[in-house]
Image (tube, rainbow, N blue to C red; front, side):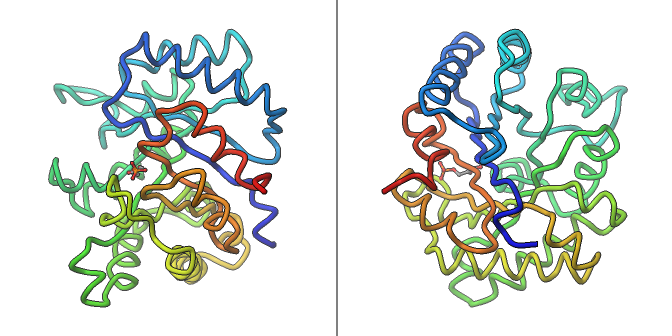
Length: 263
Ligand SMILES: O=C(CO)COP(=O)(O)O
């Protein structure tokens, strides 16, 4: 299957920004802009990842106004329910209509000490509850400078997918987010993004089969802007973007969604 047959996914990770009132405004602005741009959801899928406290408001808007907008959470518990103060179950996310959940973002790995084993349990929990994990992998600057970025990123992938069946792997999304490019304004080159996404797809093929590897969407994340999106997304193995800062501005986010119409 050629890359064009994988519907690209443009995903906005709001991180810890926008309270539930601000979320309503931003979702409406994104929806209006998509409408003005004659957005075709079969051409590009759009998803937003607000903080947990916004999800109910976003669900109400999306379902009430039948918006062509998917949404998801930024994290989940590896457990389904019980005495886990402060955690949020994938079951609850599924009930709120979350299609996706981000797992293993570098900010979780670094700030909250999440290791590969915990990330693997979270990926499995998401799949179990029918929420698609957007698994984040990627190297830090030291690893890239040492030339071990591919090896490092593939090891993160291996660990996260270790306990999944082929059928489960076929349902996930993987985001390559080099840590040195996140929030720094320093975007990876299109060639770097393509090299890593091709390596990730190759490894997924080794873990599953060619058909599954052709189906899985691979995103790039790290300082994506409307100016860099067209070239990044033109790469054969880059099937979308996980956008941080630029997703907080509806105009800029929708310009990224229109990456293939840019002149
Ligand atoms: O971490 C990111 C998305 O998950 C990328 O963030 P920025 O786009 O702000 O660099």
